[in-house]
Image (cartoon, rainbow, N blue to C red):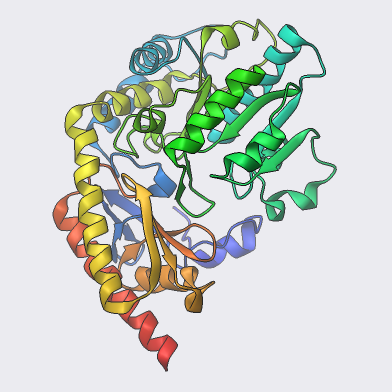
Length: 406
């Protein structure tokens, strides 16, 4: 007999690092989720930019179950066909010459930073160890990546932190240029800061970082964990900006909900990572790679990528209309289907409340810090679901304004 489960069980059994919603989703299809009570929610959160093809996509189910009936795991003493096919897909679609598979965005960023530092040590000497990152960035929760993230709230409790990591101001090339020198081995940057408030980089900023890295023989790392796999309307956001990195990290949407991460690398950098220098038990496992290969084959098509740009228009036009009615947001920003609505100063700190009101109306949205409501829906969400979801969001905004004025 299966055990009855309630939301209260989380508070009793789970380490309290999360504060999940008061309901438990149990079933999904497309852009919809239903909870234990049968209430339906339109999903504009997308598992934090993970569920690129929505929930229970038939092609993903087929890819998973076909591989599951063959074999699941061997370890890295052996390779497998799904991993090799996925690697070739990624190489053919991007700047990369080589791929390293892992299980998450944090692991991919850890691998990128280690690769950049080892390349610099091998080519120039151990003095070339400095890493330049940016304030309000997010690169993961390992000790190395959380230090690179530049948000002390996430790292200060775990000191002493890894050294030789300095932080510039995002989108401020003067700030970065002071930090990048001949002792810098890598610059790591998100083309669009996701957790930091959905803040797109300017093209000029990224181009100038590329030039500074070239001048000082430093690796340019693009963290595309959140922006990758179609989210920007291009397969990867570097293609949107026309600035090519040396190393690129991808995860989240790559598996469409099945955990997988990857580091994409130019040959020069990949070549220093010889046998035994890095590894992972589950990275490149056939289940994850079979699913990711199917996701990539669907997303990397003109139909889906152009559809993202069309959906961006649907969202932004309606959000501007909602804002015209309620005057809640000082800016609606983002690229593709990574969209942030930054609250006006008088509503600072209230993004979570708006997301909770939206959930009451049957809509799942995200926040990006205390002041930004974030949307990261499925890349193939239907227009009817966008319309209904934004109607529900408008109702939540109306309730929020009424509560503020009372």
